[in-house]
Image 1 (cartoon, rainbow, N blue to C red):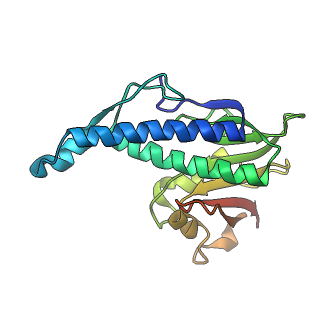
Image 2 (image 1 turned 90 degrees about the vertical axis):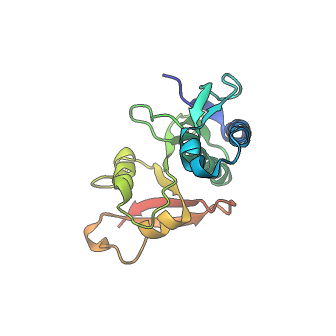
Amino acid sequence: MAHLIETIRNSSLGEAILELERTHELIVYAAISAQNEIGSKINTWGSDLKRLEVVLPQGQLLLGKSTEKLVELINILATTERTISALKWFETLYPNAFLRECHSSTSDDTGGNDIVLIEPKSEKVIVRCEVTDVTSSNPGQNGKEKKDLKNLGCSYALPSDGVDRYIATSLEFSNALKSEKRKWKSLHYRYFAHETKCSNQTVMLEIVSA
């Protein structure tokens, strides 16, 4: 099954960032063009946009689909923007790292994550990261935190494997996840927040032991 944005594998961080940014730009321009074509029918504006199919230049850069619903594009593009911000931050913190895999709109590989970085010579995994663009200020929203922790292998304890683990997310969701109001005494982990300084206010939550 084709994905909107295909997985990036075995790439430098710089090359991956450039490819994702250019692919993101292609999709945004296609979406804006499609919106302009439907006009402004006030009485059916919501239902028209909900069903709007955007034509895409499949095969260019990382584009794996020829069409996609606008509402799906919005969600995927928001996550892609978080992914780009995370990669830029990683490029600064781990300048010698190599990107083993990056899934901005696809399911992770078995035993993989949205972003996995390795040490080039030894090919040892040094970073695992899940990316999400949750707009809620509720830490339990859609069970997303539990799912991300499970994918990162942190459901019951943090592995002692020397791998740095992160959740890249929105400012509002990061504030909810690290809120002092949570019942931290019953949890085995804590979050250390890193600001990416990107315009979309992506926050990198490093997962550490309690």
